[in-house]
Image (tube, rainbow, N blue to C red):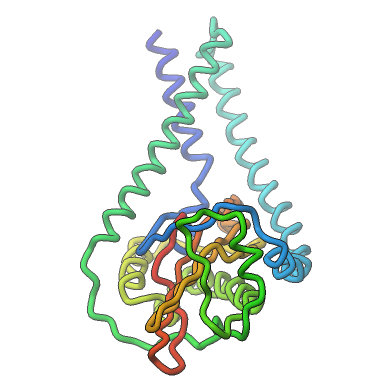
Length: 289
């Protein structure tokens, strides 16, 4: 019985080691940071789909290449896991195992992985409550500001009653989403290269301080995550005399070029802009993963 238990523990550790969490290497680490807002849960509207269509066509070749690379990473991981299984089976560690035993072992491995991810999310939540440093720096170019908005009714129809969709005047949804996809890639590159000064241009003071601390925690560890493909849709918009707020939902896939592993993207970025200040840029104030 003891021999069987030790074999199970070895298998669980192999699962944890062979399946690296590529999600943790992308910008934000796949965690929630800063402010949160209620948003629409519906599928992308026709307008958002049209806005994403051209970008998806441009990214088609890169996406296919990324899938092949990710598949190779999965095959290598499978070979390593297969070698461990062969060693365990060859040593007689699993003699007498029944199907229920195998299912139980798989459940233990799954729970262990989920538990470790939960710890990372709790750490991120705790860091969000740390006091912000007194950073004052340059702001991003106004690439997120565009012209008129023509599809608010399409996006808001059928949505939750408590979620506002009241974009500011002179707001072009399609142009904004096109810029948002580009900024997603820009921030991922800045995260890879540890260019905190680039991150400063896009983030609020509080969010920058939290994410800069997270990036420093990696030390000299190599980070090289690329965006395989990314889509964006507007899921919330509101404004007052002083401020404008917009929430953008990103869905897509990133790839850790070091391990070859891919991870799905499904997160919402909350942005704010001061309307009482001329040429004020949009700044990211929160990320919900």
